[in-house]
Amino acid sequence: MRIQTRRGGKAAWTLLAALALTACGQGTEKGPEQAGTEPADESKEKKAVTVSMYIHANILDEADLNKYVIGPLKEKLPHVMLEVTRDGKGYQIQDVLSTGSFPDLIVTSNPHIPTFKDAALVTDIAEYVRKQKIDLNAVDPALIEAIRMNSPTGELYGLPFRQNLGVLVSNLDLFDKFGLPYPTDGMSFDDVLEVGKKLTRMDGGTHYIGFDPGNVPNNMSTLLALPFADPKTHKAVFDSEGWRTVFDFLKSAYEVPNFIGPNKEYQYASLFATERRVAMQNTWVLGVAVAASQGNYAGMKWDMVSSPNFKGHVGKGREADVHLMMLSKLSKQPEAAMEVMNMMLSMDVQSMFSRDGRPGVLNHKEIEQQFASGIEAFKGKNIAGIFKSKPIRPHEVSPYDAKLRSLIESTKVEFILGGKDLNTYVRDLQEKANQTIEAMRKQ
Image 1 (cartoon, rainbow, N blue to C red):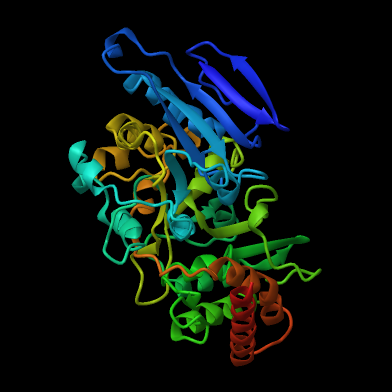
Image 2: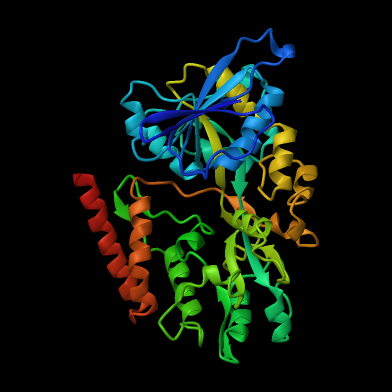
């Protein structure tokens, strides 16, 4: 295997044994890397080809790239050499485009599809899907729709290979300590909040948190597929029933007696695994899988239930969060690139994802039942609950979403600790958001 990593503008070459498919580096290197295997005897009829890949937002870190892409390539497509470029300083989309070319494959998540669309890098892959006889019916239709919705005519810009799902993870030791029944699948946020109130307390000098809402309100907005702005009118849409529902719940969660800490702290995400004084946390299953596999929950009695939701929406999950590969419009090797995309949908690769606690994308109960079977800490857990809340169609992304998410994060303290009422906060947020949009449009 040959790996090329550019560090500080200088190329460093490393020769590895073909079976040494471990992570190279710490996942922080940026720029082009090259990895692959020499063609095996049985593939001599296929000409060796190099497929280039652009990994955006670290959707595949070094370990994942080696295990789920390079390893399967060695077995299934040994004639394919993979050249990888990661986004980062000097390798942003426009930096790479300025060279006059772009990698064959784009690895990203569905909220970022518009970014590549604006850069004129997306293309419809329908003809390649037909030629390579890729069975889209085998894929969860909600995930395909999450990709198609980015085209006004329903074009398919890429194929999913992995997804993320929301869950409620619980420290059952705290439920035992205070004599309360465990959480169950199908809870509403009102249910969760009532239980959380009973667990939030000072006890023996320790500050216990019954329910940590997590990244609020941004993650909760995905349960209702709430848009941040109207891309047609270029106006924020926070003064809506949906957003008011989210903000109202936020206020209720933070007004629970003893929730706000003595030093005005109100975010407790890291304490679930470290100090173990958070009873319930609203989070993503990928994060739970990583934490459990790294031993972060060792010695804790913990479990998960399906993602809670607002009344009237229980049973529905967060917006589909799709990790996908897209064919670049500037691809020089589209056929080979599509072979790689097709490989990611193979039963072997999808089973590997599932066993490692990474939700796959196929409609196969067998794969779903394998979920996290390779993680010792998941044995005996409520695996079925993870899949009971089905992902919903994402909101229509606007060019302003990222800035408006940041605006919510920077202003929500006014609502949580500053004493602003709901109407005042929404009015001020709407005004600031529209000012932000106007400033962006003038750039």
